[in-house]
Length: 493
Ligand code: SF4
Image 1 (spheres, rainbow, N blue to C red):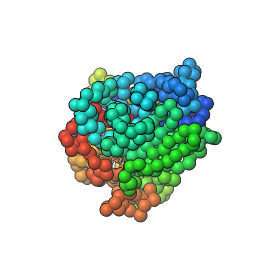
Image 2: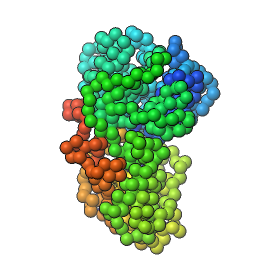
Image 3: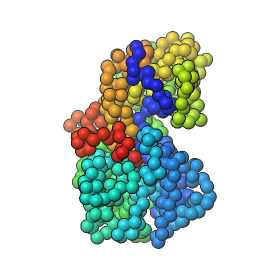
Image 4: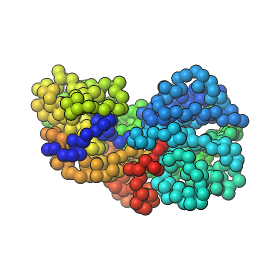
């Protein structure tokens, strides 16, 4: 079955265009003489969370030093003179993800920095403020002039107007006016400050490197510098680190935790862990749940690389079917690939993935992938596996159907572009030309992350992209503002 959603004329690599994308990673360190170099390494480990822009701001307790640029971490922070210029014992860093080409602006590259009444202030954010546009419009009416289009800048303007005596008082006053799902790392001349949103939707972890404190979006950033994981920053927690050590407080309303379950499914690196659950193990367990819920008569289990690998291993183990790398991924494909003709565009599908014919020919194949967004990738992968001689192709997906957009810091197509929002699973199977298609159930996903099942009255995670149950109020969306479709003020972090 052909459909416009599946036959789009894409000007970017079709495989890159058909995934939800995490938007940003943060890293911070206090109390180390190599703060900037360690931050650069941490950002390297968090590169998967954002590839458009990268930045580090450091401080020696007196002055600030900044380097921010469009591009990857390695392009900028592998240069000795750049790192040497970032002096001081504390630093924060940020990787930013671009939602579309039009949003590529140097001014949006974080951490942001402002000279305030109380001195310099640096700020990096992962996540999204869901009332940023509404607040921004109010601020503009009162005379505020914005430099960038990122929602994070709203925080700086609110702090400038706040009445609190200290930096922390002003930050708390600003954040109490904002709604959203975010992790913030901030830096004044003397303090490294971390804030996690009241429901802990976006991740933030705390670690130690000797006497130094480190904070990061994921634990994989600790591994690269040899830091020890201490704990997840609590939902709604504010942490201040300075020469007196670490102070923790909870200045925001206590709310039940609703961590983003998609971090486990896809966004986070498989070697990270949150809340003491290893991401890799959770993904394997999802595969086992999937095999129990939706078994298939097959000869081989093949992951769609790379994100489908752990779940495919779990599926294969549970089902007792051999696992093989029947699709090989080319890791050196750039994001942009403009195809001049239909014929060349069709060949371009094989830029990123190619079927390993000898492992597939004549076999009934279970293909395991993490999600179906628009469905373009799935259709082409199934075609590719069939062309390599598969006798049957059973598609298994290690997340429930993605039926809703995310407004909490993840780049999602609008709802009408989500295949699962428009079509039943049977229709989707026909569209992607699979012999069968199954998704793990929402309870299966919850079991994989250690819960008995989803508590419908008080869900333990944010799962809004599967259920439409949005835990954080969508003020801007309710005001009919085009969040997620407009380059003016869209999620930038
Ligand atoms: S809507 Fe989905 S992707 Fe967005 S925070 Fe919630 S679970 Fe994560």
